Amino acid sequence: METADLIWQNGEFVPWAEAKTHVLSHGLHYGTGVFEGIRCYETERGPAIFRHREHLERLGKSAQLYYFELPYSQEQLRAATHELIARNGLRSCYIRPLAFRGYGEMGLYAHGAPIEVIIAVWPWGAYLGEDGKKHGIRTKVSSWRTISGDSLIPHAKASGQYLNSILAKTESANAGYDEAILLDQHGCVSEGSGENVFIVRDGVLVTPGHTSAILDGITRNSVVQIAQDIGYRVEERAIARAELYLADEVFLTGTAAELVPVRAVDDHELGEPGEITRVIQAKFEDALHGRAEEYLEWLDFVDVPAGTGEPSKVSG
Ligand SMILES: Cc1ncc(COP(=O)(O)O)c(C=O)c1O
Image (cartoon, rainbow, N blue to C red; front, side, top):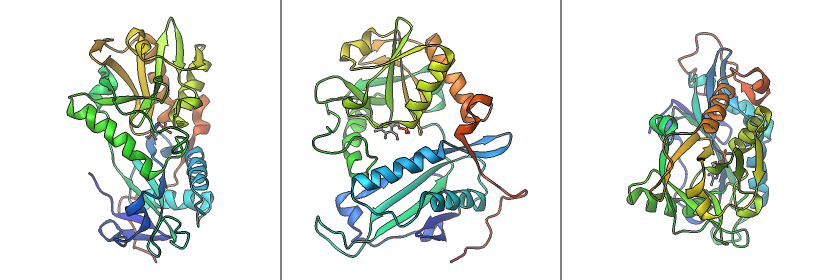
């Protein structure tokens, strides 16, 4: 992976190589962590974080769902992220805040283990590749079902839950596909290993609703808004597996992947990205890069002093 100079760790800016934690950290053993994936884009007005407030709010809710008390407010985390991007001299980057139970107590009721918080930023290109964004990716329906709401919390973005996504992603990659699509416990379409799913049938966009064990994707929410603003109808409902094969268009949405067309599902060819996917993708890209006036409110502009490029000294 690409690196940056500094990581924010428990209130301090530390050199990348020195951001360390104890091997008996609770989160390492039991997956007790909550995190976010956020992106900052270069715009004409400087670096801008896409829907920063919504991501920090979701982090707070994920924390609450796992009975974590975050030791920092959303405003403190926002300010730390701005300073971190500026001090690393980055114009665009991926942003990873993570809160996890640290070292101090073992066992499953370890409320004595402190909550540690880090924020890392680094340059990270399109998760499923630039070619995938242009021409579409090949997907496979996973044999692994999405975690269900009666055993874990699909609405939380929690570290341990990603073992489910990792099994699905590994299976699809080992079989030669770009991404996995998981079904829920009822056999209906749920989501990708790290993305929400949309299909287009007869000009209508359809995406699974909240009872389908999905993460409430911030990209999903943005795409629904954009589609409706353009004038498309959007339905939230259960999607049968075969509808993926019968759809006119299919695409995935997520912060890391952005909006990625799907060109095949289980070797059923859908072909090059369709018209509606392209129209929404173009508008979404405009929104990310500050080119869409109507969505400027989604951007949290980072104050980067002129000439930044060299991080200033590390403070304690
Ligand atoms: C399991 C899962 N579903 C959906 C998403 C898409 O969410 P967002 O658009 O907020 O990045 C992600 C990525 O965060 C994810 O990990």
